[in-house]
Image 1 (cartoon, rainbow, N blue to C red):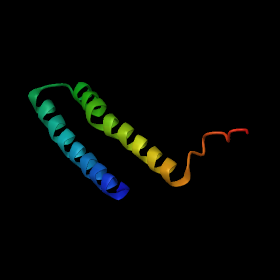
Image 2: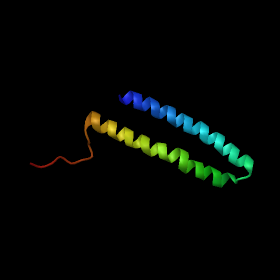
Image 3: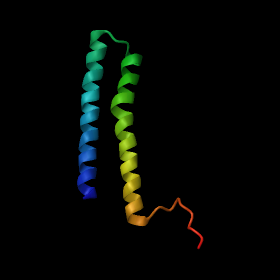
Image 4: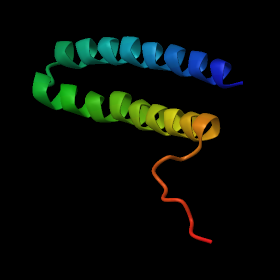
Length: 75
């Protein structure tokens, strides 16, 4: 199950990079400054999947090995 999710996330991330690059080139060609267009695309296309991927990896680690960040509860 997790392998399928990871494959889809990698494919999604690759598609985001390709579409982001094309959009960046179109925005620069239309006359938008590179700084504005690059940082807008960085926020929209890159940071969202990275945060989602980080949450996915954290959940997989917790399923496999338990949450090691939590202190053991006293009884």
